[in-house]
Every structure is written in C-alpha cells, then in structure tokens.
Amino acid sequence: MEILHSNILGEGDPLLILHGFLGMSDNWKTLGSQFSKMGYQVHLIDQRNHGKSFWSEDFNYDILAEDLLTYMDHHHLKSACILGHSMGGKTAMTFACTHPDRIKKLIIADIAPKFYPPHHQYIIDALVALPVASLKSRSAADFELAKYLHDWGIRQFLLKSLHWVEKDKLDFRFNLKVLSQKMEEIGDALEATATYDGPVLFLRGSRSEYVADADINLIRNHFPKAYLETVEDAGHWLHAENPQQFIEYAEVFLKN
Image (cartoon, rainbow, N blue to C red; front, side, top):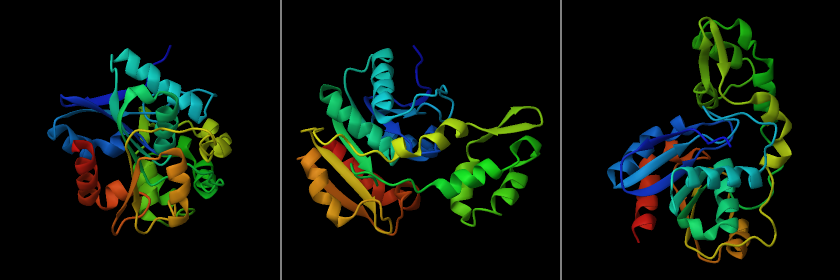
C-alpha cells in the first residue's frame, strides 16, 4: 500500500493541507509555516500523480479520499483539521462526507461541490507541446511556455513542478499523461446524497468565478453548517494572492 508523500511542520493538532490540480505541497510551504507557528502540526501533502507522491492510472475523488484515509492511518491520526484548495477541496469534501468521524474542522478554498466542465485544456495543451526532453533550463522552459500561456503567474505555478530528474534532464513532477485523460473526473460534482454535518468554512476569491452566490444553497445542501467568506483582491489562488486575509479567516474558524 503506497503512502502519500508529505512535508510535516511543527507540533500540535494535525492540520492536513491538500493542493490543487497540477500543484504540489510546496505551494503551501509559506502558509504551512505560519499555521505551524499557531500550534498546529501541519501536513503538506502531495496527492497522487502530483509532487513527490506515487503515480497511478487510477484517479478520481473516491480514490483520492481513500489515499487520505490511508495517510492518516499510517501517521496514527485519529482525526484532523483539513484544508483543501480547488481539486484538493473536492478531495476534502469527499473525505468529510465518507469519513466524518476523522474530521475536526474543514476548510474549502475556492471550489464548490458542483460539476465544473473541463476548463484547463489550454494549459494541458501547452504542457504537451513543451519540448521537455530538450530543455536545458527553467528559463528556457518559461520561454517556450510563454508561446502558449501568456499569464506569467500560471507559468510560474507550473514551473514549480519542473525538476531535474537527472543531470541535463528536466521533467514535471505531475503525471501529465494520466491527468490529461482525467479532466472529466477532476470536474466531478459531489455525490447528490453526500452530506457532512460538521463545521465547514468555504473561502472564495473576490475575483474568482469558481464559487458564485448561486452556489450557496447547493453548498448548504451538502454542508448544513457551512460558512462562506470572501477573500478580497484575490482570484482562484486566493491563498497566494491575499495570504494575510486568507490565514486570518482560517485562524478564527479553527480556533472557535
């Protein structure tokens, strides 16, 4: 049985953080360090097919939730606070609905329990077109990606996963082949009957379109004790664009 890779920071009540699609645990290192200073043992987790965790052809939210259960059992965590962003938020929602006794507090960042049509195809296409085998530097990768992706922030986010597999050979840490085939699964809605009765904080970016006012009723159908807060001057990567307000909302919720 394979165990998800993680970086564990600090001591105290466990707080598990799940990154989004094409991300990895390192995206949360700065905020994770801040949470650890508040008295949490922070587990920055790489989900399967991402970061330093194992690769697999199997990929859906039920499987990702079971990966999380296996991880908690391996680390002897009876229960934990869980924070999930985007795809990681869908994993966290699924986990909470299937294993409610393992959750203390749940924070969902910029994602709703609804179906999202595949909308990352332009990023996948750019990555597939990238001549990774012939690249000699990160700057060369950025130059090539810029031909397809004009958003500097998205390029930098993707390039965080670029690493030296061996001398003179770069590659991405995410499993592009499998993830490019699983776009429908990544957009999946929560099961219609899935519910979790514990406290949940939903955070959305003020400039993001992922969580609309029209989604609030659906959120409360699944999570009757849900709170919704808006992080100002932030888009989908709200934790990176306004980390101060993000962590303020999270700290108040976790402490109460």
